[in-house]
Amino acid sequence: MIRAFPWPTGTPRQIVRHRRAKLRIDGEVTGGGTLRFGIQWPGRFHRESHLVLREGGTLRVDGDFSIHSGATVTVDHGAMLMLGSGYINGDASVSCFLDVRIGHGVAIGPELMLIDDDRHRLSGARTTAGPIVIGDRVWLGSRVTVLKGVTIGDGAVIAAGSVVTKNVPPGELWGGVPAAFIRAATWS
Image (cartoon, rainbow, N blue to C red; front, side, top):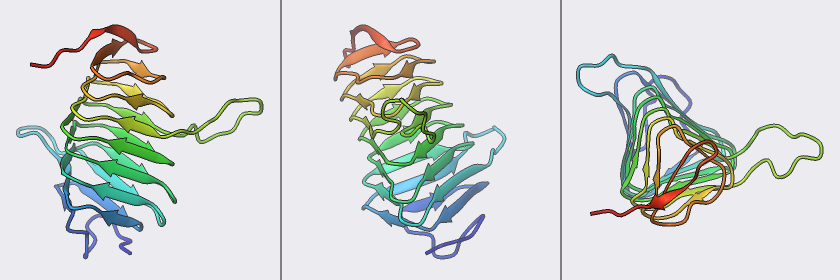
């Protein structure tokens, strides 16, 4: 187990830490891919990034995946974050308390929010947690929020500023608050 900020010795080979990226790895890192964490665009200020993998949590990296600077990624005890290939732009927040799966060939704009658990229980409320699944070749625009229990199908596109509260079928463009169908998404 690795328990140190900002740069633990013995960091798993699957994680490449960039400047001003802080890691706390108490859980398990698996998969044959590579996560580049805290990447900064050339000519911009380096913002601090945080990756916290709690004991009993699992981060699985299957392909080449990049998360840019300013991100906060938390994988809680007993939770699983699976990354395929692609990237998440800067200032993202990924809160994985249950199960978050991101497919291959994914392009995600800045200021993403992924939240798979409300983290509080209100009496009479419906389920407060549910897995998030983002399929292959999905494009999420800037400032998209994806809430608990949502599956975004392969080839889907989510417009900037949208809040996704229900499942998005494959090959569709959705947008708005809450996100709704706009039209079919055709890739060339």
